[in-house]
Amino acid sequence: MYEEMMEGQSCKITEIITPLPANPVVAMAYVPYQKYGEVYAAEKGLETGTIFPELDKPFLGAGRGAK
Amino acid sequence: MTEQSRLLKKISAYKFSAWELHIFLDTHPDNCEAAKKLERTRKMVAELTAQYEAKYGPIAETNEQTSRWAWITGPWPWENGTEEDDD
Image (tube, rainbow over all chains, first blue to last red; front, side, top):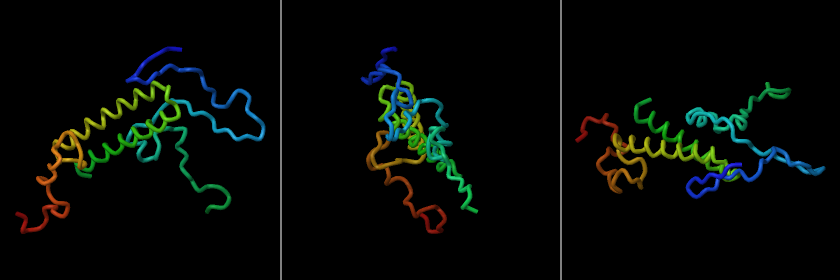
């Protein structure tokens, strides 16, 4: 772990957070913890509606019902 | 797509990106990479806004680059230069 300060914001990665908790409880819903990876370029992000590829889920209307 | 609207689109794109990073940092405050990226994006927004304001006047009513009342020198919204009796 490294300690780094950025304008008063401590950047010490306290502990590695896994997407799901170590021992998830039965019958509980969990949202996996988002990891910071790639981001879209600004203008592409504006068009798609997010700069995070993992959140870019366009509704394609496919599937049984939709024609 | 005039130069002005192209620049405006770019500014809103970077503002959007900055906002996305801001929200990400709400849940990941210890993420230095995102914080640095946000810092760079904000500088980019300031730079583009300064560029825009140098050419087209104030972009919003309160900005450092222009005086508070610089808007009076620019054209009124309905003056798009097509009428004949333009003074």
